[in-house]
Length: 461
Image (cartoon, rainbow, N blue to C red; front, side, top):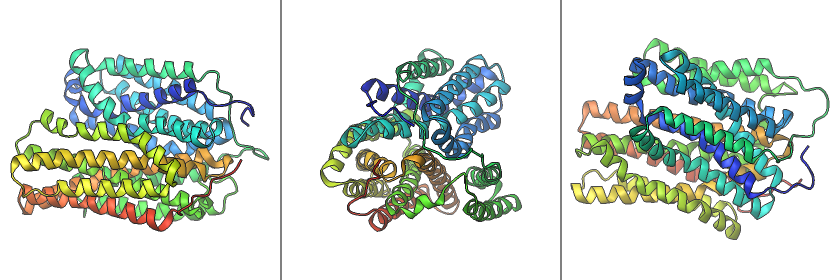
């Protein structure tokens, strides 16, 4: 139960943003420093890729669990657990001399992310109301949606000029700062009756299913989409989802309360969030295409997406203001539509070099503008329409949709690009790979139009 008279402060907001940024420092920056880590620790590339993917895997598997535990045990407590795990995980990477501490550290960082993301959203809802909550969620979105871009560039600069381990020293500093800044925030938890019984059976089914889905998505292309292993993984994924839904439907203290999806606004926000995050596949296809098909260096392809980062960061507060004027649905629709247009123009690979470079740069800006406009209205819709005693769990599902959408989109886009590339030119494969993401954006737009009501009903305390 939260302190009745406590009102959220800017200090609390910055503490939470630092907590979100510490996640991005170890999640995103790791992708950019593969050669440096490999040379320093002497680990094989395959081992390093597994270590990188473990964070998103463990985050995806436990984010709903952590969100539900935050509701029951305390949202501030679970945020602190996440920040402590972040410090320990980052410290293990700083001390790593080989693969063992690296892998353990990455697992702890994944668990840290699972705790931090839903618990901090739940704290925002608990201690902010109306326009102030929307402002707070805007800053959360800047840390979350913009954090990946900020830490990608910051991580590269830190690794180049100070050494890659300094990224994780900064991660520790941010986590400690976050803990200090939110120390005065009162505990917040759901009002519950009866003894809390953890759903271990549901957790077991969920972990097996999530493992199968994650391995299927991330390793399917390498294993071969028609191989026996991949087909078994697909079967386990489908059967696991069916069994999990059936099992949870009969549980009183279910791991995931599927009644949340009876709320069309929440379902629309979550489904569109999954699909719009899947558009992240554009980044891998466009960056690969301009390097292979147009002769860009990795640095030059990185510069092309600078406009994307600036646009996301600048539009998040604009999306918040638009929502306050028009309601949540319109900026969500506009954001998805602008993203759709931005990604569509990047598919024009038949254009000559200079014109295509300009088009891609503009496309990335539109992509960022659309995501930035969508971010806060979508998050606010998911949070504000959820019962107070389920907000941590609901936030966990919403953020899991982001992670799965991102992984799904990247895997599908990369597979489409490489498959078409074996039978056609690099230009055709670039077009088809990007059109895959246009479809994701279109489906996101359709889900908003169908599911999100024009006037979103807020959950009253």
